[in-house]
Length: 196
Image 1 (tube, rainbow, N blue to C red):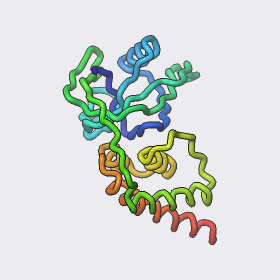
Image 2: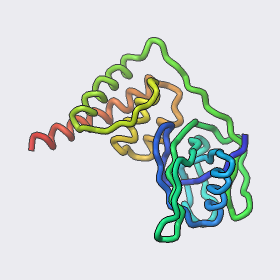
Image 3: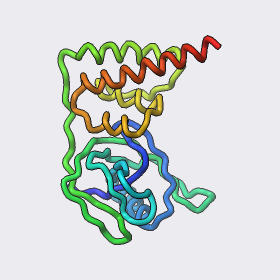
């Protein structure tokens, strides 16, 4: 399958939300095509380069994004709201007109785990407590171990390099262990805040 790519300095996870303001002709054309055909584009994290100008060098794992809302903004830009859908791996890429990158991709299948690893269960217990303690609003998602990890990453705004590691991972145990460490630091921070 071939999709257009949107290199960004952020990571979009499945089920996550992304707001963009478009002004470059290549991305305006891409958005128009997606809206007309009800198709998706691919969000990929930049390794080297910039979001504007010449095509950036990116990671090879990204997430498809579907435009859910759009509006012409007062500043003249096109505002779009997107939702992350499926993780993909870039097989081959090319540069189209206006320096728009596109790629042949393969979707990455979810890996299920039964039974759930202990590190995940420990993460989930702490994550539920954090949601209650910090009064975090988490959009409802289908029950899925990976979705819980993704929503945590979005809620606590972790660094993009860790989010990219989570996106690329197929090992629930290792990923849960990594995010358990992050959750423990968040928990300490929240407790200190409430004790002041």
